[in-house]
Image (cartoon, rainbow, N blue to C red):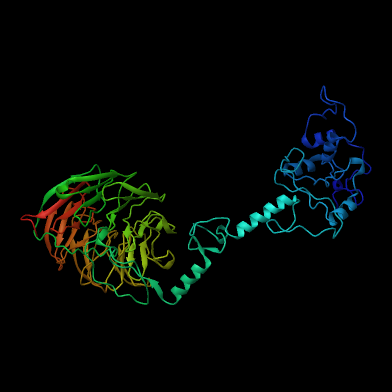
Length: 592
């Protein structure tokens, strides 16, 4: 049934058979005014003649094409911001307005097009801002329908100058007038500009993604060098032979593969404290040794210090929050640290801040430095950061990542996640594979000489995965495994567990030996040039163990040890403890 308010054909105003309604009275009904406004001019104003400009403006507001809305239905339409669309505005006096059909004929001959929407309209009797008014009944095929919003076409009237401006803007947009970073974050293709698509959470050029996928399908992949001081990663086809373990590198576990091997020999006999550096809180981070002998250490009191010979303080930096993570030092002396306030900071060799970037999530896993200078950082996923502090890419994960990224020689960045996944990313940030570990992962992974990946879980398992992410074997301990497995030169995997034991596993996953301690083992083991193993326990003791599993000596620190030790070129052991101290231990007589 037709709405009587819209009128019958030939009576579009719906006024037939109705008493005339004055302009001000009709507007008061729409607006809910207390009464009609006076038509008298303001005091001192000249008398108005019929048909003058002021009268035409008022008559335009209540043109014959608009029927007043009355009753509850009208109030509901006004509340939704819907009203009748005004009739076309005319330059002629009110008495000489064109009939409705003739106005359409004039528009078809090149006159004004569609009615423009008044942006100043309000809900007080007119359409709400941004709402389209209901159009008057129009003869069929009077003019073609308007194109959809956003499409090209004369759907809004405009002067020639405005049309030229819009054409110019469209040309600029098609030529790249809208700028967008080469790799900005995205959730869908709609957020990317031009010939870009959303790929792996970043806006990427289509041709670049095609080339990358083609390279992956043909087996061509980037490979990581094991020496950050060497050449950049190179593209090579197929398998890549892994070089022997490099010299001690200034980062967590002595290098990007996290094997924990050191080229230096540690103390053979029970050592003594040579010096100690005290901080104001726990030392959870592992000490890192620079090429010049500088010792870098962070603390939960927010400080990060560079120590010289004899433990003398060279400089100190105060971070925004606790420093759980170990540092990574570049060949040019730049020091990279993460802190619990989400910042990654680059410091010069003298402690000056070069730059910092806020990742908005705690950085409590140690960063890893690649040969091309890219810094891989774990937080709410994995970040690749260039030497200038710009994020090259970010792969988000569902949970937090406390696993220090490890670099696989096939060009993979591998981490464990808190939601129980082992995640491998390519050097470009795309997912190579993802494997369910069965439990949350709070420790880092390591990579053996044959490319096997070893990682522990909070269910007490040690997993071995091949380069494709397949679990080769699973070894079960009695409690959480949060230490990063160390790998000896003969392939033996050495890892501690919260069940208070240190385990040595063969490459096939069988147990070779285990050594009990008096507390949980959170620290990772370090292996010296002679195969001796040094590990701390939460029974306040530092242990030295032979390759055969024999305890060589025990040294009581007096506090829990969660920090992984570092081995200096002179045989000095550096280890942090929960009492806030970093100690330098050396066998009596100097060299081991």
